[in-house]
Length: 309
Image 1 (cartoon, one colour):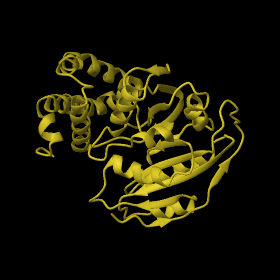
Image 2 (cartoon, rainbow, N blue to C red):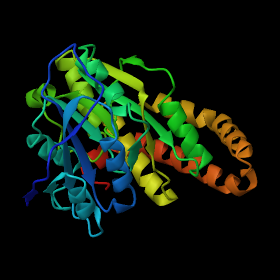
Image 3 (cartoon, rainbow, N blue to C red):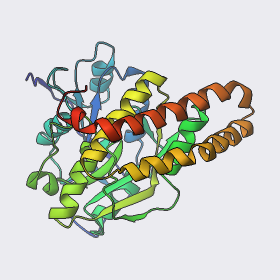
């Protein structure tokens, strides 16, 4: 692997002081591939946070050919490079955390923008107060995304926060203690859900606690075309089956509930006054979702073994 390192400056943002537990600071890891459309807004959001802590920004890029890297360097990121051939979600994170200087690790997607100036404080608060060892925040859909996608986010990331008994860690907006990673890092072989597998292992073997910080919100720019959506949902579902976090029964229940989800999507589209334009997209989204889940229930073993990629 080729890991050239471009060093940027450390940034320090002021104002929200944590006194419950001493820590060196926060290292924020961002994985990128051609993310120039959203990255600048993401970094501006990070730099606007009110928190009395030293912040290290690390960007792990896997071969961007747009302005991603230059935007990162302009915004004081340390830039690491990993080749697309060697990339996996877990491997990119492990590389970034290897260069992390602080006790607290935060991971945010390059196409997620923090909401408000308290996002970071709310995300790491469970760790600082020693209530949990891992946390993740809420994802909000964009106003122009498909109604189905908006409802998907609302179902997956509800208003009410609290402890989670299932390994629902989501590295689009997450935080965890570096010492967990030092005991056991991210699985580099999984094609998706490296966050879920990491949380599952540490919850089982380290008795680590996972907290959902619903106030730590990001806007998630995620309006995939149907083919991209299918590939993503299929890949994620296969790993969930492999980890024992999804069952055929759950998939069948989802299939039974599809009419309910479609009606709910129609209602959301009606409130936006876009119902007639949205009907085709809603039906396509739910059809893709159903096919991905059903296909994964029968094909996940081949997918994990690399026979169906």
